[in-house]
Image (cartoon, rainbow over all chains, first blue to last red; front, side, top):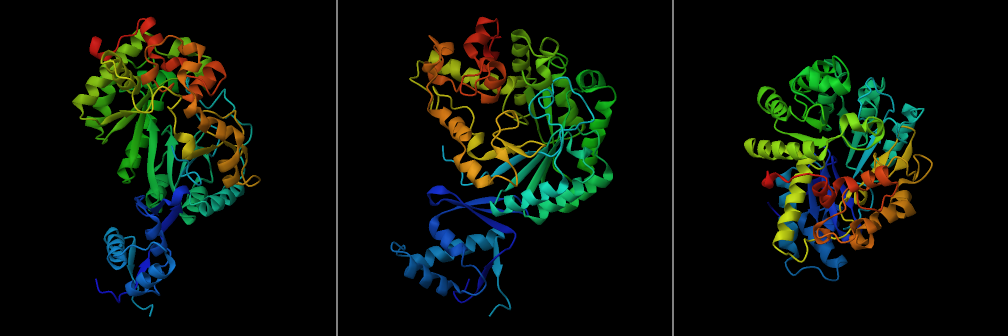
Length: 95
Length: 366
């Protein structure tokens, strides 16, 4: 996936935020659930069809005191997982 | 055990009415048997609150959910609010029309039908004449429409010798992937008919042996969270641990059996929130009047039930001198409540020591 594509969360996927920073993404279409960490929650909330992967990485680094060294790689891995699960897609006409 | 920020799942009794009067029904003759069902609009409003709380699933029960004239409206509202649903039914009122509607919603996790026999006599003895064929028709209708259908078999005196036939019917003839079992418990109408319905220790032993064998024969396609199959597995594990002299089993030795109140809540047909459909006498608040989040996170009765996991079994006179304490969970709080009137107490029904003292035999020893 190119870094300049614009991923967008599917509206049928819900985010449940639990205590202790853990969270679940849940597909109302299939019932499938997927546990995610706080960094992934941060990314998920910004998959609005406006931000590129590079933009997401920049925001993550700017907002997290303890952003991982390979933030770019982790963001890309997470978005790829979402795309593979059908939890996110690409914004085609959003830009 | 971590409590969720809001309940993940709600058991909702959308009606207190039923077209049947099964002799061991936990609903009737309990606080869950309410005089009035709340109006459609009340449910629809409540489902909007559930959406705000990101509740993932609502399990509709009762009473018989298919009795409600507004069932389609209720299901549409759940789908509109991005909530998946499941339905617990006696199967007798399921038509092609409603099955097609459920299938088209694409939000149904499953519909569970109660079937207690391989032939009419074993099913109808407790559920009423003609209801076996109606339930089977209902089940087949669901399957014909591609709906995930499950079956719950409630084991009692009248069908304990029919378990092999039931497995053959459901898994071979009808072709279900799996089914689950429990047993008639000392709740609701069963309290009035206990002698006629509930298994003796000898019958319970027989059911355990049959189910353990059938579970092996059908490669795990028979499951249980309660009843003889579940008891048999847990008790065998406890007995092995005792014989091997293990210090304890993980999480055991405390009232640690039920984790439901950490992720689930229930609502009676009159809109009263309760911890569990089988603890319908513990009133936590009213929907659309009391905040679901506030009830879930702060209600003292819920906190008390969650706190039972820190109560050691040795603190009960009932458990005094028992060798199984380090391996025991105390089992279902609702059964303890129904038998003794105490939620935070081990359930006498699930006591291995008592079962053996009364002549019960574990599967491997038969």
